[in-house]
Amino acid sequence: MHGTLSTDLERFVNADGRADLVHEIRHKIDTLGVEYLYLQFVSVTGRICGKGIPADHWESMAERGFQLVYGAAVNLFLNRHGQYMGYGPEAAELVGIPEPETFCVLPWDKRVARVWCTLFRNREERENPGGFLTSDSRGNLRRIHDEFQKKHGLHLRCGTEPEMMWLKKDDLGNPAGGFSNPYCYHIDQFESLRPVYMKVVEYSRAMGLDIIQGDHEDAPGQLEINFTYDDCLRNADRLTTYRQICAQVAREFNLIACFMTKPFMGVSASGCHHNLSLWRGGEDHQKKLGQETRRAMDEVFTYRKGGENTFMPDGDDPQMPGEIGRYAIGGIVKNLDALTAIGCSTVNSYRRLWDTGFWAPVFKDWGFQNRTTGLRVSAPGRFEFRSVDSMVNAYLMASGLLKAMDDGITNKIDCGKPEERNIYAAMDAGKQVEKLPMSLGDALKALEANEVIRAAMPGEMYRLYHEYKTDEWERFMHTTTDWDVKTYLDYLP
Image (cartoon, rainbow, N blue to C red):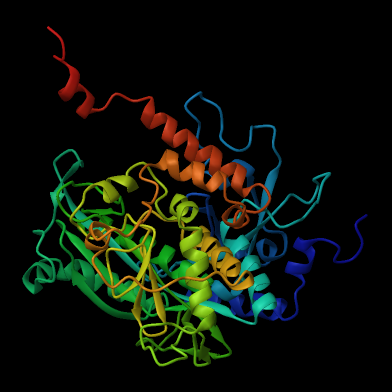
């Protein structure tokens, strides 16, 4: 009906070399004793969703995929009016096709492996049957990055700094404060969580995360454990895997792995700074990470190395990036309001911006080694995007940053000079600096008005993201909080 290899789905399944990879997975399943597979994708908000199947059915799933209601891409949640968000019950079912190169055994139960999937429209849809599903944030990032590389001959490498908090539980399983005291960089507080973070490191290395450093941050139970930067899609996969690992370790230690941005006021929130660089060339290299028996495909342990970092200074000033880097900064700063709707994606995110004194960025500017700005050059050849927190969907964030940098490079947007002063001192001296949006509602308005960043959410993605996050904002505005009661209960006699 549609002709041989006429759809995106058919071309994906029949791509050169894929049959060999599918056969290789069967060999791994049999030799490693894998009995069960998680076929995973990521929802609009960054949740890991999917299905589990017995490993006996690997080949049929690799060819045909699994079906799931379209609404699963939007967490299958109801809005405040009791209606399913994004797609109703009459909608068709998406098709998830596994990517064999992402096969990785779960180190906490070696009978189970996970495989990332790309999502497609149903084969029987009247319109664009078997097309790429545009509500697949992970698939969108791959395609947006491919377009960027074809246009500019550059690729994005990214490293993320995932802060999160380990919380204790009371007898009912509710949060009972952070496990450790809020002492930044204190080894003794770090040591108190050693059994926890050592298990996280063990599992992370087994799943391809090259752990490079960790420390105790300055909130109760707050740790930051970093892994090596890489191609932006693989980095987003690893950040998502890291969260999955933390959730498992929390179960093992009867703790809560809290990625909520601001569970406590008066101490630092959990950010997720994105360190960015645009490169030409380079090659993929394997990392062993202590594995004698590798229970994953080579891609899981692959990192891009070498090539030309175009953000490196090209003049006499060591603090000024090269021309491409300057244009990229210009594009990010220009579009920072709309990017904040992705990087600070929840109502709680803005507690981080309002609780002043804890180095959260609230101003639309850039600097060199300056933590009071929304973007800084953190080291030669590397930018740190700071308007992003621990609840971010990393696939949407990388897509948005690619679109902002494309805007800057294409239109040669001048980034101006870096701000070396504390931004508050600069403002006292008369500098005019705009604030970032200071609520989710304002950020969503900025995103709605920004065609550049909306292009990072192609097809149905923007509609779904806007609907989901607008409902979240409206739910908050529709709620009486403890603060309301304490402030207004006896307001009048």
